[in-house]
Length: 358
Image (tube, rainbow, N blue to C red):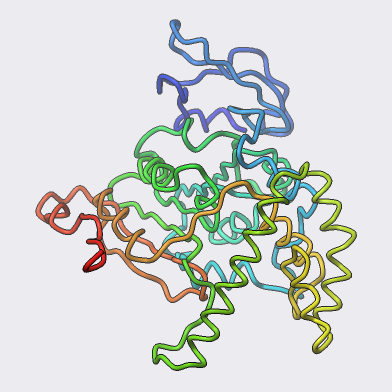
């Protein structure tokens, strides 16, 4: 946290400016600990700064499992010499380049352990801001504190301490579908972006299957198997979401590795479907441990079609909407925020009609 960041921050309750109300402890040029306070005398808003991170919430609410997850697997999904999954996903789902981001202010909604802030910060932005409702912000800060152009905030997307139209680029990758109201969270994110800034969003798609366009009995059978796998997943989630987070995390750390290696053996690999598991054959074992927790511990999951999310972008009057050719299982769009009133957005905003004869 630096004092200059107060320029784009506000009280999440009344939107007034925020001030530093008590003498702060500094670490180099960062405020390590201190207290922030709303400048409005009639507002009682007050928030701690701890570990250089302003804490507008101390509780992860619906997303608590992710805090434990990212602090346990803090470095698993950071790109290294073995895996470049984060860069691959960035290019296929958002694809803003160094030319786009240089000297700009960027915010990520749902920064987790900082895997995408790590990618963004290398593209020479003025500042890359990560906001997360959980204490995963501690994992991301500890991972990236050696970089001078990153900043993390612990806050609820629905009670946002960011002023309107102060950000150049805002994005969220694989997060908003875990919130109670993803469209409302997207609207909050878009509100932070200035005119002619850009917005990017990636959510779970309705189907994870890279389906051929031409129908056949084989394709229909694979569709059925994928549907059964979704049923299996939701059957397990009915129970696993009721298990205390730390107990299920222990299951992921100590039992899922067995399933991970079984998954590499022909025929025997199908045994893993008898247990809650998300296992990979070509990624390190920690990825299977992490993504099993990610899949089965989270309390809320939404899935979308591109056309659904396209409507959200229209409602926010975003233009130049691009649908990205991301992996199967992901809906990825980017767009420009415009103040152009010549285009009739309302003409294309409507609910899908129901099925005939129903």
